[in-house]
Length: 377
Image (cartoon, rainbow, N blue to C red):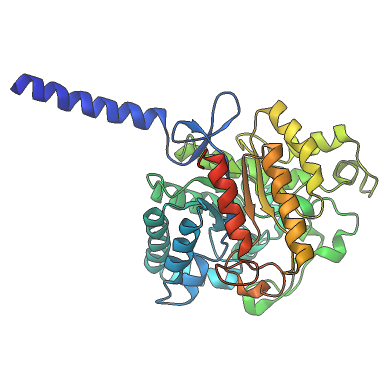
């Protein structure tokens, strides 16, 4: 009996280890290019809950994230894309002054997500100019792996990824938000990052704060390679939007000439370089571009992540457009998509969705789609 008990215990440990190996934490890409979770093919519609961490960081004692995450769980919404660091350089002051509290807040948000069963995809460097401004370099240093910008990126990636590596609430990692849309603009001088010294920016900008596709791709690739040092499986997203309709011509000619479908595919794949393993786009009025994009994703064996989608407003026309967009993505087979935007009062008049405002029906609609995707009646 004793021998049998020991054998059963050992078999249980072996089975547990095998199960963990067979079903890694978070989202990951199967060998056939299918998005996976818990050992099974996976599809879901979630939200952008961008300030769930940074609100708590800026407001000591604020635990509103508990109610926010609880409401998502109640609506059957399993995943949220979030800020993985503050937006402005000045808001990172706490990271240097009181790193213990910085991570106490981050820990509390991750723990709440675990309790409520909501997966998080933190975008660690959402704001393109935050890190260069923070370390006193121009934005073109995202293209220099030996820069202080990259040194900080590597330090922060190491801290965050290793800290939450074993959390079931961490579903993936993202670099930033729409860096590709700032690349190779023919009128780049008119679209340099803002100058707001009170928020930690420099007092001047120059052509060195303008991005190219090569700079952006270098930054994304270096980020992804750093993540892969510590996390071998979870998905990595660039955070990019759709390539601009003229992206190929911008990169090669600095012109607004419209790209061909083949040029679009080249830019989409180039802007999501390995080891990035999903294709990131953001879909709004141009969401019909998703059909071609899904075909490109299938051929590349990289699941499509629609990191943002939505319709502004709260009238009947908005409701109809939203319903059409959601049905289109569901029927097209989009694996993962996140609605813009949840619990973000700064956009109350346009995009904000809460559990009790005039746009709350969107949460219910997401929940119904997720039920169908899970095969529930």
